Length: 159
View 1 (tube, rainbow, N blue to C red):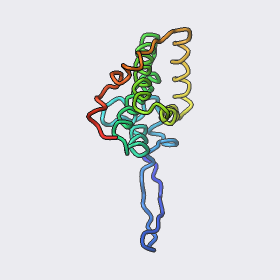
View 2 (tube, rainbow, N blue to C red):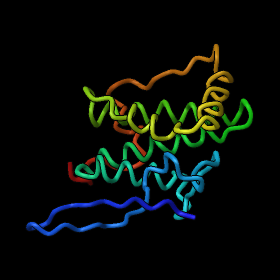
View 3 (spheres, helix red, strand yellow):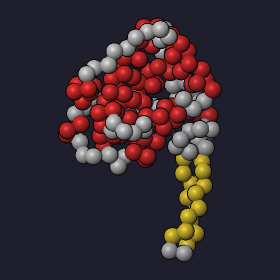
View 4 (cartoon, one colour):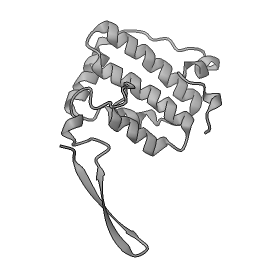
């Protein structure tokens, strides 16, 4: 059963009550599994993807960069062994380079990480993933190559 929120707003002096889905999924039992819902099968949980679209959709570059980041976090959460964690962590490094290229002075990724790791099960899975990486060294590409760390062409998108 989907959780419905009732939003009441005043439009031209008329009070309207609008039912909307709890898109962020914080207390939504259907989104509480480790994997969560991913109806479009792109690897990003629907609640996280919706959050990114609503909060950062004003910039297609940033939206795509944060979706790339969210995908790597989800891979980390779902990793079950050292090899999966290693692959997810390398993707994470590339996503961070991409975001640093797109918006070097911002840390929007923190908002997405918080949204992605939003249940006790997901926190535990993320910490287990991080523990598997303890002591490993991940190299960064040179700054001049960070644009190529994006899984999309930033030059073809509007700000």
